[in-house]
Image (cartoon, rainbow over all chains, first blue to last red; front, side, top):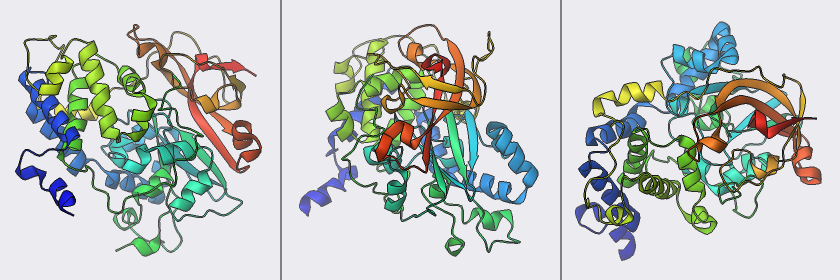
Length: 208
Length: 219
């Protein structure tokens, strides 16, 4: 246990892990050489820690569920439609919304790296970038869904989108039954990040 | 290249293990690594494809054992050295041994929101019409380039169908290696599960890739 404790108290001394020390050295160097502005680093971190995350995508989905004209615009031009809500840019310059139907479920992966729609989902979780998901999503999508506790109807086809270009995909889940009359805010509350990747489904019971 | 990054269809990595309540960053170094990657990239000296190629050039055993931000660290080191911004000794020590390359630009803190919001669109004006139309049958080419490509091994030599035309997009295979920017028509090409995986496929599955025009032949 002492080794474990040691790992978690590095902020108070110089006992950085090797990768922490290497990244710190790189930052020190690039700042000293004038290549990066420390204020820019702070602003980038703040953006992805506090401003850009899956809440954005949830609001896109909720609007698509409640506003058929918006849903149609989203279907025709995802980039322009999400820009109506103020989202877009880095890591999501070309957004395509893919709509789940009773006949077909959509699943997003990047087998070659970690492409993910940053402006609407934020930064990807570790599992999305890791070999188990990247290797198996294309060959055994139902097996991957089982790892997330999701079982689709046997007759619902499954469509996997490998993000091999700068196109970024956002899954629009089906609106669950029992949400009739809900406003966008309440609907957004049941749209999980995983449901917009395709490894989860919105659940009415998840609403708080 | 057929590197450690080309993972589609490989086996033996075990189940996907989602982390409950995963934080955006696991420790401060991950957040600094992300920010360094974005800020250094904004100097404008390498393309996203060049740094992707730097990452996939990590020996496979290392690639598969590194965390993703470690992969980013190694990739950034490689391009900083290649473009004359820093030496390995400087990056190891954190101490500058003198001036390096002068960057085209330095991203200032005040400009971050606008730069991130604008992003780096990859669509370019086309000089020729698209060769393929939606619905066309196409076959992906077979190739095993030593350099960068975005056509995964599992989707080479396969029969598919054009599902969408995405526009004329910057071509990664040459742009990763310092060639002047070129663009090609980009398509969504969908394959049936059995076309890709034969008798081991989930017959209800299909998979698409985003494929540049030179990856495709009429079928």
